[in-house]
Image (cartoon, rainbow, N blue to C red; front, side, top):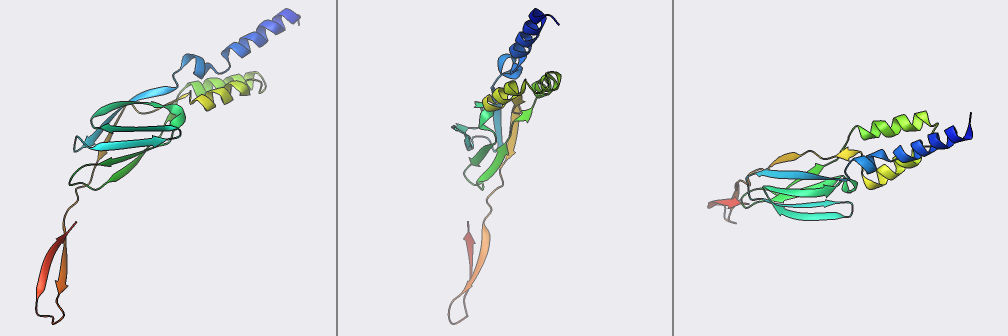
Length: 153
């Protein structure tokens, strides 16, 4: 095989390695909605934090996954959710390049993974908070002749 063909082939492999980082995005815009609306949600992931009032759109880097979402609203219990990025089609492209090159393109996959490329968050998430209902507590005084009904939160 001519050395020029080898060089062109190797250059082509290097050019498409880490294709998800080159072609795809490393962050996603996510619409956060809650029931009830106007809940405060704090998001925390790997080297990422944000605080929003729903409904809101927040841009989250894929490398922050998984992201913990803690939402609070008056009259509702504090609620936690996990928001994770899912693989998209570019991961399969990296896999195909690794097989085709006998593993040489593993560098591209490592670059994509470190940047969070090849993954996406859902475009919209809906979180339902649970109402914080009062719970009855029964109490008696020491003589046992008074029964109290209290409402605890």
